[in-house]
Length: 279
Image 1 (cartoon, rainbow, N blue to C red):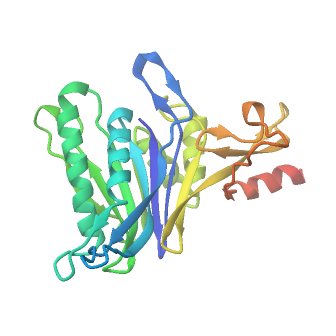
Image 2 (spheres, one colour):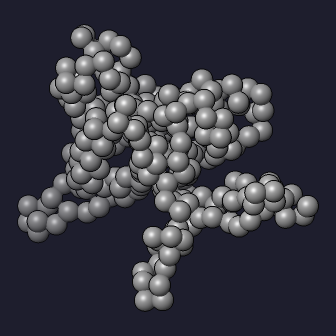
C-alpha cells in the first residue's frame, strides 16, 4: 500500500507520496516509484497525399499509483504507451480530458477485472491521473478505483475529483494523514507524509518522499531536499532524495567522470532547517 496526497489550489495542482513497496509477510523495499510524468501526444489525421501528420497536442500529465504493485505498474505501462499515440478525427473526436480519461478507464477496467480473481483478497490498485484539459483549458484530476473487498463482483469506477480547491488522501496511510492534517492544516503535503512515516503507526508507509507539480501545464517530477540530524538533534547535513534514493552519497556518490542525475529539487523543510541551524 502507500500514501498519496493530491492537492489543488487555484491553478496549482500537485501529487506527493512515500516510496515503500510492501510484499506482505515477505517484507518491503523503500524505493518504489509512485509519482510519474506521462507524455500525452495527440496527432492530426495523416494526409494521404503526403503521409504527414502533425503533433497538435503535446503535454505531460501527472500520475500516482496506490495499492497492488503488479496491478499498478501494469496499468501504468499500458497507459504510458497508449497516451503517446493518440489521433483525432476532425469534427468527430472530443479532444478533452474527459475523452482521455475514458480511454484510460478502459485500460484500468480490463486489467483490474482480469487480475482480481488472481490476487484474491489483496487490494487492487488505484490510479490518480491529472492534466491539462484542452477543451476546458484548465487542470483536472481523475481517480480510477475499485471498492475494496468486493473482488467477486467488482465494478471499476472513475470520477473527477477536487472540483474545488482542496486536498485528498489515498492509500493505507489515508486516515493517519487526515488526522495529522486536521490537527494542523498549514502543513504541506510532504510534511504530512513525513509525519506519518515518523509516527511508524502505518507499516506500509515509509521510505523517501516523492513530489510532482504542474509547471506551465506540464507535470514535472522533483527531487526533495531533506535533512539529517546529529545524535544531539542538531542539524547535520542536507540530503537530496529522488523517489526513495538518496543522491550523491553511498552507492550514488558521483565520480568526476560520471553522469550527473539532473533534477530540480523542492525544499519543503526550509523553515525547519533554518531554525535548527540558527540554534
